[in-house]
Length: 610
Image 1 (cartoon, rainbow, N blue to C red):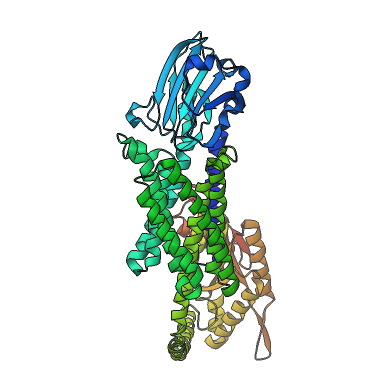
Image 2: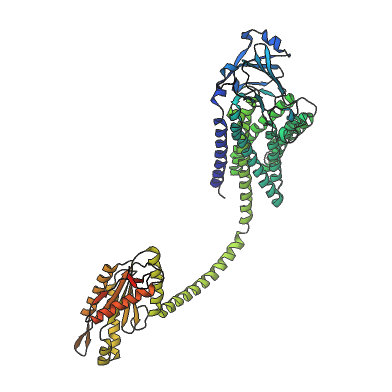
């Protein structure tokens, strides 16, 4: 498989991911993007009564759909006036969605003045079954409340504090979820297919590179599923404490397996000892982080692991570029591109988690898109390496193969020459078996085969077919008077004359029997057939045969039938009509052409003309 074809496959993957992302973003309602909110943060928890006492200038304005405060252990309060909602929230049920599934503790309040109309708790500190709706994100169903005027949210979390707020009428919420679930499913389907494919290659080849690559894909897929809330929803929904730990361990394992993969794939021990030491330290550090994840808080470990992931990507970028510059190897160049794509994705993702850049569809899925490109490019890189090594092994066998090829070529040439001789002989035998020995035109046997084929073609294509039957007038008397030798000469000259009169390649002359000949004219109507018949008859009439200082002449009578076959079984009827026309020409004085149309039996058993 060529490199260009592989890159085309990569483009299809990226196009599919971009399309899914576009669908996901297109389902973001314009109303949610336009909502404004206010937030207040404090190092200690304060209640609603204390919030009411805050001055308005202590609240900071922020777009509700992109609230991102980075890693923070402070207590966050969000408030939003409900009057700005683009639908009638007082008359219909609606749903509030917080699009980040790793928030530890959430409290929702719907207020009228200082009166609490609705209060709901949620968060990763609670079992998944305690959530208001069974979805990976946090979704709160809110009934119609005619007096509601403010929405308050309290958030406290060890993870990145991202609170993207979206609101939907209840009937629209489940429809918009389809695109998001489709994106996640497509992402994990791509990773799983690459994992299964490379694991199969490992089982077949026992090359540890493919095993390390498969393990890194599996760990990364588990981490992304945890970050999006799927593992919590599907695997340990009753064990909240496992969710943060699983994310940390899967991220640490991803770094371990990717570092080991880089060590093995790039042959760093031999080609770059310093880089070998660096990547070995990554393995040791990530292993230590995996152990510390059992003891240190989540917000500390996620910062350490995310920082090392960015550092690994940056070093892989520099290392890949350096090795490619030294070796000019395409597989190393693909490794460099893979590291670059992952670096960009992780950088955007990390900057978003630390609150440096806002939350949007690009930054939220940057790590996923970068990882898809990474997975595909690394697969192409390994395939390139495998193909190059395979070609090197094949090159060692070229001498033997070339010798065998030369011997086979000599044998093939002899076989080919013998086959060509046999085919030529068979062709000559076939021509002799279908050619009249005296006149050198096709014989009756070939006429029967050709007539059947042309008739079926004319019936299927609904085109006219013309049959001319030519009989030399008084040939028996001529033969008796001048002898068989001169009669044979007359037959030869008449056959040559007819062949000269027939111009088109598809038209053909046959010896029908004795002094009778036939001409088949495909795709020729009665008028055209009559013109050919008259030309043949005139040329025969002008023919002169020298015999003992005497010029002898001959004439011919021609009967023809030309029409479009309407039934598949009317081949014999066409021949009968041509024969009847020939009989009419004889009856009318010979040396003339007569035509009859094709006839078929009607429903009463009579003959009718078609």
